Image 1 (cartoon, rainbow, N blue to C red):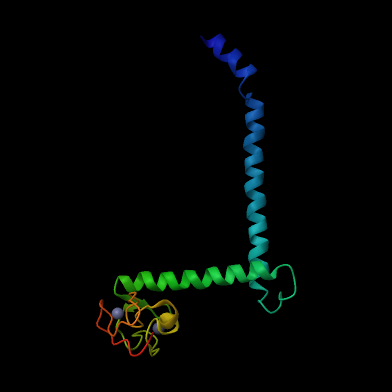
Image 2: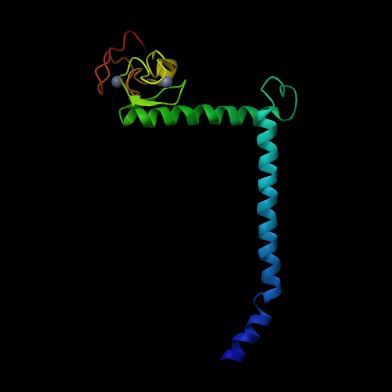
Length: 147
Ligand SMILES: [Zn+2]
Ligand SMILES: [Zn+2]
């Protein structure tokens, strides 16, 4: 049985040396991807959409900016669904209907004011509402005149 296994291993499977090569190839590929990512992060940190405007980097820069925007929005929405909001100035987490940050004193406007019109989200709590609704069904906020 042991002999058969050994023979099968040599003829059809990978030898230990070959497996070691694969292991090292995988490791090198990971290290390379990490280095490329670091290089990309440095490039991203030291450039702006304007500085790359007429270069082949522009679409990637815009993609990252757009993803960051959507990420920030979803994180804000997720917190709001738990009745919380984050102070954008100092990072403090407070209850959703706070008027001021109790840590840095930042005055808060409606949380989803910017997204409200385009995405039909209640500015107060972030719940979605139907076209033409007069009040938010989640928190009762008056949705004055938005279409
Ligand atoms: Zn704050
Ligand atoms: Zn609401």
